[in-house]
Image 1 (cartoon, rainbow, N blue to C red):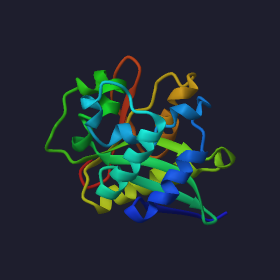
Image 2: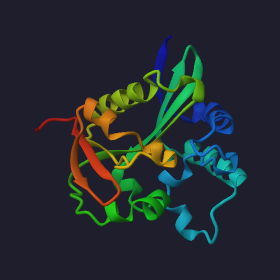
Image 3: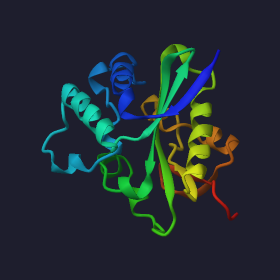
Image 4: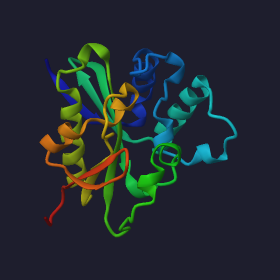
Length: 200
């Protein structure tokens, strides 16, 4: 099995959309397919209602082409099998995902002099789960963050992973194995981070 990880580019738009079209989320409801539009823009703050699936699909294509939607694709033997949304933390503090999912984390003190890349979610094709895809994506995110001059990579796994709907943020154990530590915590989440560029 050959795994190839690469950064999302506008040329990958068609592959990305097709992957979300055909890959179910953990809750199994196709109408909830997010296309990851909540973690790259504050557009949702201007909306009265959450956009429909088709609207989210169109938003994703536009966000990829404009560079708002950032992350990494995992191809297995040439077929897209996994995705990780990872973006500059400072650019996402007002995104819909922060607004609705992490209000307690938003309230934590944030040193704006630090350049931090945040990992928001993973999506892996059902047939490719438990084959190390998410771990390979995580490894690549950290390597690319170091090359790009980031100080830290940060993630926000749920403390109680019993709710399958929250698996998309990864598991604390996976981050620990990759060298992350618990930097802060809220009632429901850990803030885990890894220094990737100098320092301790």
